[in-house]
Image 1 (tube, rainbow, N blue to C red):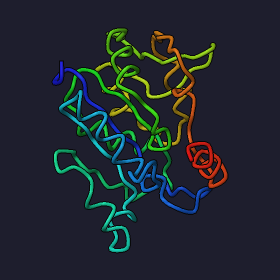
Image 2 (image 1 turned 180 degrees about the vertical axis):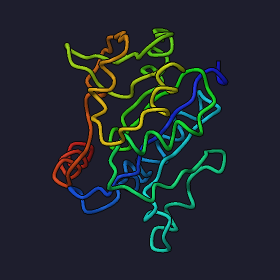
Image 3 (image 1 turned 30 degrees about the vertical axis):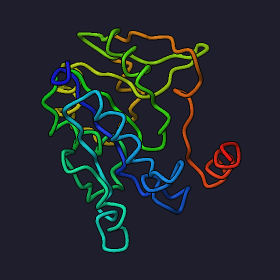
Image 4 (image 1 turned 90 degrees about the vertical axis):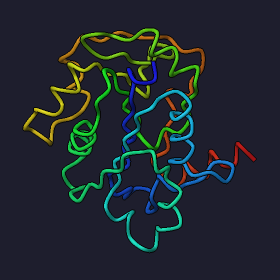
Length: 196
């Protein structure tokens, strides 16, 4: 099963609303990125991390050095091209039959969620985790979708619009963690306050 599923962790943007790299924000002393890598590593053998190239600079070296050497690192030198472009960079490195697409600002994924999505995999499309009628993250895409992402020339298109062109299967989750993400410093501070 480990070889059937892979993951792309997207951290190729500039985190402009946060004014700090989301990948290196911390939960309980562990960065978002490290937390995600550790969870996926327990279950998958192929993990691709797409990083904004600025995160490879010297001032972030202490953080970037903590990225597991077993991960494939792809640097996005054109973050202005948007999330779809980052995803295209990632899928070019994926060899797995199915792939989780994980945003770094949604670090609350659990092994339960990943197992549920794998059990409900969609051979020709996408599986989306749901909670109370709302779709969340991460999504699981099939080889068919991976190939289409790689071949699409329009790098500016919106991911949701692209996804709706495929067969979509849903998997109900028992909690709202699949809906949570952190986009602003205020959201992060609120989350930290709840945790402490």
